[in-house]
Length: 351
Image (tube, rainbow, N blue to C red):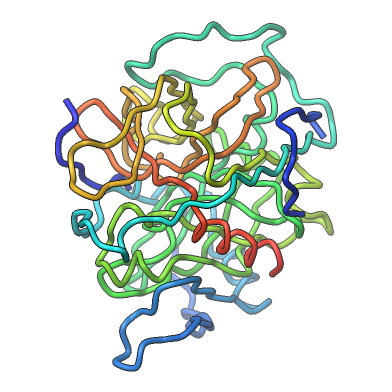
């Protein structure tokens, strides 16, 4: 069952308690985004560590204009990207350190809930999320464009951060590991459902990925990224929809929940939020893998969706411990959030 896998396409040490605080020709492409890479390698290869790509105000306005309803409908669900298997070497395994947690933040207005806790069941296949709560506003759909003009969709989740503007997603939803190309016209639509944008469209002003993901050719241990979003109507992302908590170097092997916008007919063709849950177990399919997964698979388009621990089904809040990255058979896996992820998150939260 746990076979070799393929890729799907502020900081406070806190107690775990929290309060629910028509198709048209593409416009002329904007200039390439500006990238700042920490310690670029002398031979031009991607350096390990945090890589930031920033977008100008004009590029953000262009992204907002670009994503018409027609283009949203035409975006392809991000599925398989080129990757290499995990190997047992220092560059492919995340470093561990002290546990760091950041609590969730409630949505500014009351968010409808199911009225009672959803039953906890073993995951076997994704089901529509009908419980409402914080996850229904903080989970959303990502849309972006690559250099050849292709348009794609992924998933992401709002994470509490100092600048109130950060989402967690998959590395393969931000950068092409084979070429190092960072995607453009990158937007996040929280609470997306059936083409509706209930809270508006947030454009990325910066994207952060790990150099290790590119330098290893797509090692899934590093398949995570953070995006820093602009404002809508003068309000930050967190002030608009709230945020999930996030935890680094957290315990593994727990009961977890995952959320995403899978593109299969059974999942609503990417038009609704779906849910899986189960007890996580380590990825035994590749030597050197540090990923953990559950017995459930969401399809293309769910990439980047959140894995949460300590998730409260009665209010839809919990702690992000990773993002949907890869699948094998009936299982889906997430990279763990270790020290490198923590550093990347801190840089995103300060941007």
